[in-house]
Amino acid sequence: MRVFLASIPLEAAKIVIIGGGEPALAKLRLFLNGPAEVRWFAPDGAPQAIETPQGAPTPVLRAPEAHELAGARLVFIALGDLDEVRRLAALARAAGAQVNVVDQPALSDFQTPALIDRDEVVVGVATGGSAPILARDIRTAIENVLPAGLANVARMARELRDTVKASVPDFMARRRFWEKAFRGPAADLAAAGRTAEARREMLRLLNVAAPEQGVVHIVGAGPGDPELLTLKALRVLQDADVIVHDRLVPEAVLERARRDAKRLYVGKARGDHSVPQDQIEALMIAEAKAGHRVVRLKGGDPFVFGRGGEELEAMRAAGVPVFVVPGVTAALACAASAGIPLTHRDHAQAVTFVTAQAKPGGVDADWSRLAAPNHTLAIYMGTDRAEETAAKLMAAGRAGSTPVAVVENGSRPDERVLTGRLNGLGALVRGAELTGPALLFVGETAAFSATQADISEAAA
Image (cartoon, rainbow, N blue to C red; front, side, top):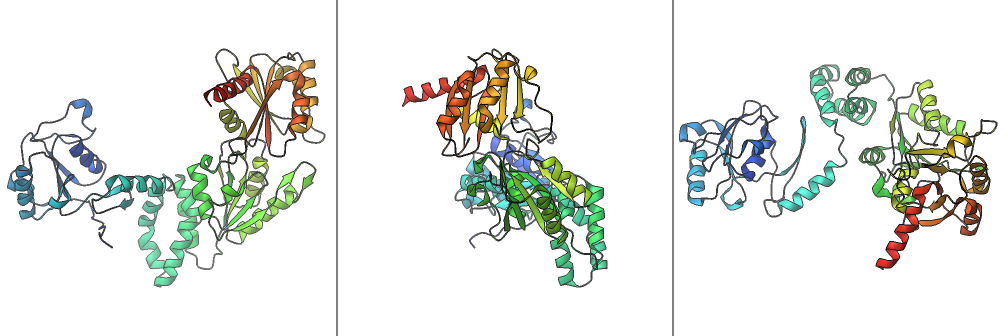
């Protein structure tokens, strides 16, 4: 280890910033929302009001004197005159402060790490001043997997710390308690801002006889490109003990999960339900009641033709804590990847997501409304009924010349886009010999895909 990151409490600490340029302002912003006393000196001139951070103290337009540095914990100097920098650094050290000279590691007692600030939780990445841009890139990668509500979790832990210590005097037992608290529903509730519920769950855990309570996250995996996972979906996946996934979730997404998580495949295709829906729900409930963190991972978005609502109801009925993490639904991703705008001021003032696979015995779609002009249809599960769907739309008044597009494996490396007209949709699908998940798009904007393909070919 070449550098050591220390955690310095800022309550009642005095911080001095010297300089009026952007490097000084960057240091100033670090402390404005904290409890430290911040003093700002700008001997090189104050910035314009529009550049000054909100809440900043009024700058003193001269260098600090020795008595003004007394009691300072940290002093940051961002000036161009190195002789003046050395003089001020000596004054600050004589006053007992640690000194950072911006972009001058050799003149500094410490370097400022790249920081992730979650109020009560602060993460730092340091390279000893040798590669600050690399430290910032690493910080960004870490920040992407940390929930925004992490501060709520830490704040609740601080508030309950004495209560926990009194209730669980044994150190190892107390450690196990905090592990359960930070990896279970209490932390999820706190991160979501549901403080009262989180506190009740934390206090419930203090009863050492209480069984550990699991949780279910119903998560949208997106259309298949792992980079289209939401940050929250990625974090939940990496925390999961059990992953219950369907056939539309590719291995590239599953590889982002915790390696030792148990994976349960419950994929369903038309006419081939490897595990019936009621058994899937029973499995989720059983795993959660065994104390596990369960992720029900579904392709696209769980609430768009994904039966996520049924699973949500089942978890609630069983008394299992449940959270929903939305995903990028296939219609959005496939359309974007194929260059099809779902709405367009000149061509489509409405968009409808519709499934061609109605529930057995259910009510058929209102084709007269779906056949309206200037209207984009994104049809899920429609390849098996493409010809029938086209016939119903044309019978309801949609022109046979209406552009259509078929997007197979949207957003994935093996994506295919086929275009045609509504009166040839059935033949288009049959001739494509589709093997992957596909969406049908009907409407004037579907023609944009063919235009984009022409542009791409011309550019090549």
